[in-house]
Length: 223
Image 1: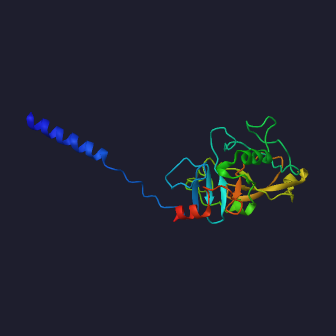
Image 2: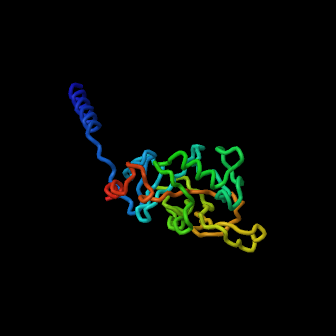
C-alpha cells in the first residue's frame, strides 16, 4: 500500500513537471510570398492570429482578408461594379448599406475605416487578382492560398479592368468588367450589374503612411 502511494506521488510529480515545462512555438516555416498583418498594421508570425490583411511580398501590395462576422469585410457580401461614374450602382447584397451594395461602397467604407492603417484601398487589377490563383488544397476549396486568404468563395471576384465589350450572351448589357473566378481559377467578363464578390488591395510601401507596416519590418519578419 505504501509503495503504491509512493509511486502515485512520483507519477503525479512527473506530470506536474511536464505541464510546467516551457512549450516551444510550432515549427511552421515562413511563407515565401505572404505575411499575415494584424488590424494594427503589425506583421504576425505564420501561426499567429487574428489577421485582417495579407502582405504580398512579391508584388508589394496589401490584400484585404474577408470575415464571416457581418462587418463590411464579410466574405458573403456581393457587389455590382461601380466606380462612382461608370458601371451599375446598388445591385449587390450586404447589410451595411441602405440601398444595397456596389464596389464603390466597399472602397469608401474600408478607406474610412483605415483597414490595417491604410487609406488607399482599391479594386485590384485583373493581373494582380489573377496572381493569387493557385491549385486548391482540396477539391472543395477555392483556387487560392486559403490558409492566408480566409472566407474566399468559389465564385467571381471583381477587378478594376472595365469598359470591355461583353461576350455574346451578355451583349445586350453593353460593357462590363473583368472578374477572376476562384472556382475555376480563370478570368471572365461580366455585366456591371452582376452581383460578384470583392477583395480589395492597397499599394505598399510607396503609399504607406502607417509606421508599423513598413517594408523593413515585414522583410525582417519574413526572413
